[in-house]
Image 1 (cartoon, rainbow, N blue to C red):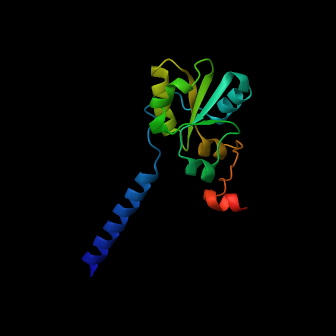
Image 2: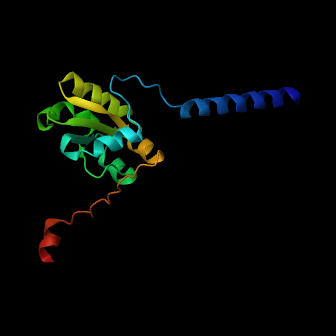
Image 3: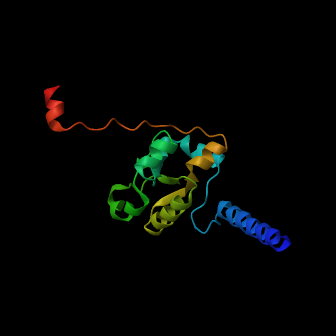
Length: 149
């Protein structure tokens, strides 16, 4: 019975360490700076000089919230929409924990944009920042139903 107990203990220890390893934050590997709340607040205080680009999916925006004003371009679509992003403002890229934002920040910097840094909206909120929640719009009604009303 003792060998079985030892095996079970070993399996539980390995499982616990694997779960802990998955929760550890990933290392920051981007050239774009990861911004803390105070840095984001200082940039948000000058809205005429700033563009916030949130690179998350719409369902993430409604579930997690974002900054009060932002341009939403999903990370995978930024490269094909560069013509619509102004180059005359500092840019903050935003995702949940800034990793996608860091990747997009590096892309924008390589294309000549002035990227101030990357921010994670969940990290910003955890540091005491105020995130705006946006309710999703109601589902669209078919044209025939809408015309009858």
